Image (cartoon, rainbow, N blue to C red; front, top):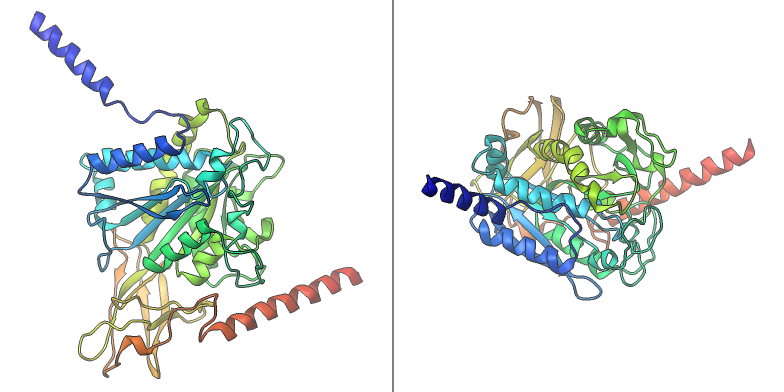
Length: 431
């Protein structure tokens, strides 16, 4: 009997020593220790790296979770979550840490999580603005203290913009993210903020409807509908949103926002998620925020497996890089192109679409019916040319805000937007 009691006591001690991540705010050194601990405990399915440094030299940590976490695998989509780009909007930072823990601790026991990790390469950045976080104050619900980086720039106004010239100098944190986007083939993303309760979708700086408005709106609805209260018209400071979603520009214009940059220049669908009315609420509320968002976080990730994916090959079976793969009437400001493996990923709702695959003067046009997603894989469809395409290095690079072969079309789009805005302003003032 004594032996049994001792065994129970020992098991209880072990349970206490392995208790889960606490619901409190974790400052930079604590956050780094937690991420390193996750990486140490789950080395086969995690990869921890810094994509750059903040103004004050703090690392911008990203933890990758996946079956092959250190490198891209053909056919496996890249997904990312980014939080805390406004340093004083702190809830998302903690949600990311708890999401990492949830994924890792349920990998062996939950078949859905196991499939998610096996079929997806998941990148999670808990804090894009660690300097701002360290300058913020708990229980500060509405001020701008800590919002900017150490140089005083709002990182969500700091990216190159397709619709308006952004004169602000690119900050180290922004440049690190831009470089990161060039290194990975991200397909789907979300960034987390505070001060409202809503899911916002592109465009942020144009009243024009984006070519993927149907899918982007669907993404916002997915998050809001799976959230405990977001879709029920909860109000933060008298700002109510129908169904818990909004178009970014319809809410208020944002020049140099990250979600537009992702969508236009990096072929990555991104929405912005506001998760708390108070930007930096009491730590005692964090568990409730986790419970409110947990299902949404997982369900949103699943959407990276919708639509269609595949590769483009030449007549010899070699992958074709920089081939444009787009759908008629869904052409983007910057054409979506294949990566160095000849891969493409297009997020689409079920339906029949006309695909145009072009490189140089060679074009493939075909109708494809995209079905409902089954399991954790989009429809797979490979395109093959009947000619020898040649060296991928000879083709134009992906669209860049710094100017390349597509810069004239971007400039035309910017000028058209400016002209339309001017005409609209003149018309309104004339009334």
